[in-house]
Amino acid sequence: MRVICPNCGAQYEVPPEAIPEQGRDVQCSACGHVWFEGGRAAPTAAAAAATAAPAPEPGPD
Image 1 (cartoon, rainbow, N blue to C red):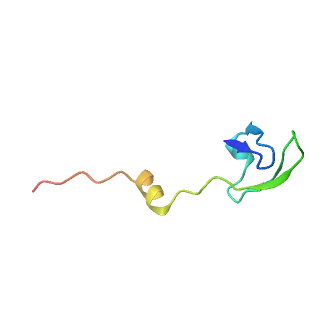
Image 2: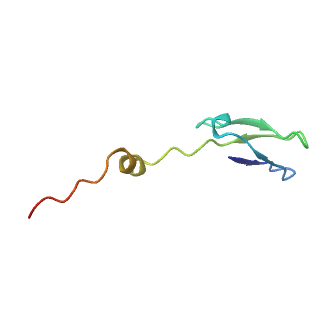
């Protein structure tokens, strides 16, 4: 996941597990600015359902 400092524009690649779903405060190592980085978006109910169960096979007519 890419994190970009809103103050100076420095970019960081961090593992997705470093930012929880609820987000967290992060600090830029280039300029020292602290901001809240939102977490990974939780999948929508429709997306979760689509990946949880495959579509049923069409039956004989």
